[in-house]
Amino acid sequence: MIRGIEHSAIASSNPAALAEWYVDTLGFVINYRGSTAFFVKAPDGSMIEIIPAEGERGGNTLKTPGLRHLALAVTDFETVYAGLQTKGVQFLSEPLIAKGNKVVFFTDPEGNYLHLLERETPLP
Image (cartoon, rainbow, N blue to C red; front, side):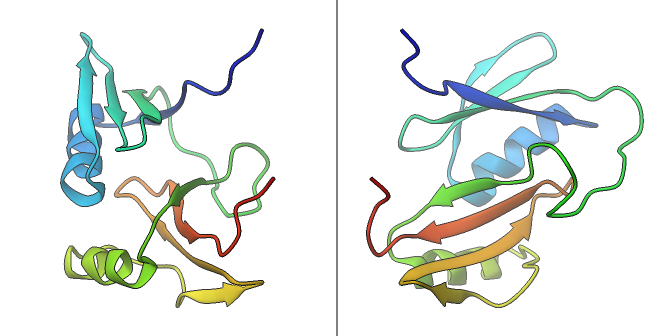
């Protein structure tokens, strides 16, 4: 039986530095250090594996085929947004409210798309 998604992975030019950014900026913890890879865990238990990249990064937009972003579920959207601003996070736009959901997109230091999301009503 498939229970769910245990983690997703990001290939990084500097896995240690990117893992530390997720810790320092987003409040994740490094819960596993391999010889070349790091697992970072969010407070809800979801994880990202950060592995060494091979080759050059291709074009990247919010609509390029493939995995496009990681949505970070938050409570108290305004406080989290303001806190990330003070840490120098570069947002791609101003926050917006759509159908009661608060959202804003930004990137990590390597250009991977993330977004904050506070849903008025959870999806079924």
